[in-house]
Length: 145
Image (cartoon, rainbow, N blue to C red; front, side, top):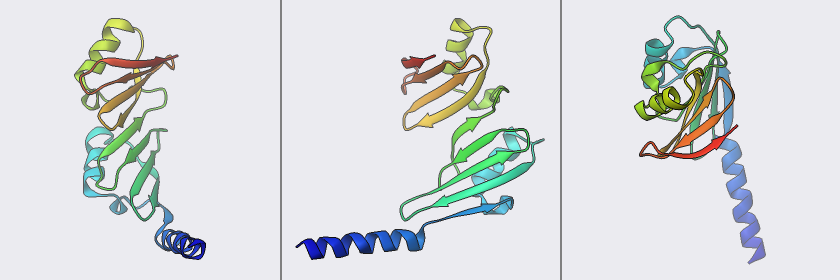
């Protein structure tokens, strides 16, 4: 039984290594169409410095670094998962209304510099480094400073 289990584990590891791999490129055509359109819509004046494609057996993720220190992360279909604008503000159109309203009411002097989708939750980071996590209904479920 141990031999069979060992062989099974070795087979999985071998398969993962065969299909896994990271690609680093600057070729925007390597991104899914949806990601390409996202960049054109929200960051039209930014130049792509680097695209990192991370593949394994079960998933593919795309990380994009733009020339103005903005970092984007997309899933295998090209849907955005994370937008990190460094010290700049995240484009308004990417932010859920509840997050914008919460920051306006509670942190009027701060900007939202990062937004991340975590399943049905949304996490934002403010210019003062406060992180706020919302559930799908827009209620604050966690805040870190």
